[in-house]
Image 1: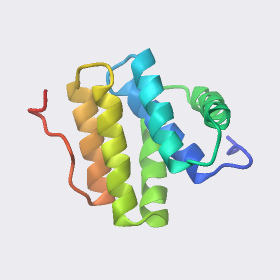
Image 2: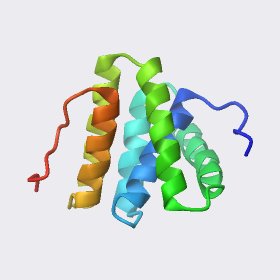
Image 3: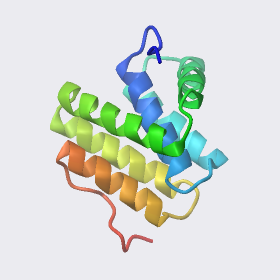
Image 4: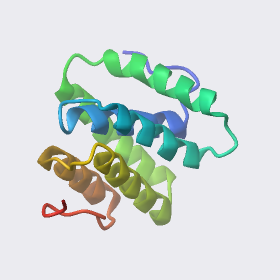
Amino acid sequence: MEHPKNWSTLHTLAFLYLTFSYTADGSLDKREIQAMMKRLQRWAPNDPPEAIANIIREVGVWYRHFGSEDERRMMSSDYSYVLKDELDELQRMEIVADLAAIARADGKISPGEVGFINAIREIFGVMSPITDSAP
């Protein structure tokens, strides 16, 4: 499968956030999408919201190329290693915080979300802002 052209770090983040939002608890809540948009906008403050929405659409097309949730999770893991190499520790901590904010957006944090965050935290080598006992 050929990787999309003009892929950026923001695309990689969007794929990670989209995979997290959907696969960690099996649903994609409108509040999670809004939180994802807000968090991505912080990574590209000079881009208009329409540009962020376009990136999410492009990522959604790539996301659907994967036949299973396991394949999507494996790609997210691969992308996490890429981000680990591209970003400094503070930026990686910000990604973990973004995931926590997206998890909280629908008012509940599922065990799947905690597990996903912990897996990313381990890849990044950073502390997690939530634990298994988080509300």
